[in-house]
Length: 312
Ligand code: SF4
Image 1 (cartoon, rainbow, N blue to C red):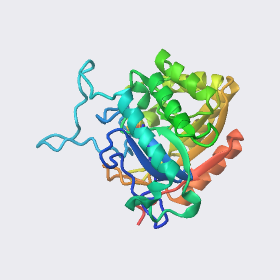
Image 2 (cartoon, rainbow, N blue to C red):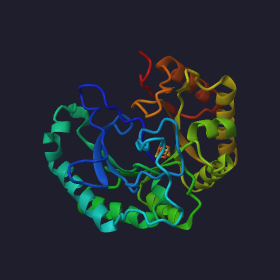
Image 3 (cartoon, helix red, strand yellow):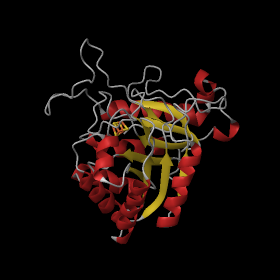
Image 4 (cartoon, rainbow, N blue to C red):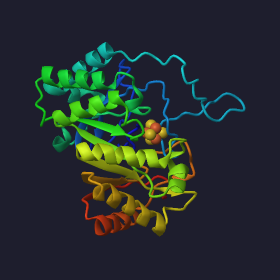
């Protein structure tokens, strides 16, 4: 799942966001606000295929052939571009080496990074699609764990993070990966962009039922604490309604009442221009108002990450 709150503005380091770094195909370094430092991304979906089609997604899936608008999804059993565990291992090892030695801060994109951000915070499974659709997901987690250990980083020094739309969390191979994450100080950041099925359909644009996402978030949160991450935005100038925010809080409360452990809610808005120009940021004031409502109705800790796309 694409990380949407990495900034590409500002002179002190929140810039240069790209999943294509040097000759690397799968791993990429970014400075992110949410990580408050360097995050090493692992993109398990270089084909840009995702089972969601979020209207705010920064991944450009437009088909520029005459008369076309969207890249067609490949047939269900079509061969996918190969993502080898060996390639992940090699690229991640090199990024960790550059970070460990400090050489990465001499790279043109990172020379201006502020001193307080010159730290590796995490290795994040986050890319051009949903990472848990990768058939060897548990093995990819193990490769990242090994690479971190071999580079000499401790578990509490560089976290492993899974950024996911939660649609595949029920699959055995994903559950095995979740267990590995949980056993090694890893975190799960699960997406929940709505409180009602119609709004979910509008924003996330998928045929995966809303109920399935809620069920997977609950089942996962029953076994390990998770963070919820939510993108609120304006669609053709309209933000989420009061009723939608109330319903969203109800969903969070239901997860907790059923035994789910929610550690943190991250509310963000569009911070990078998506291909859909009718999708714009919520102003900071509105995002903060929503955060206040969520805190009041759920008692959860809430962080916000603003943006200013389409607000000028
Ligand atoms: S889950 Fe949404 S934001 Fe993430 S890659 Fe898929 S379409 Fe993009």
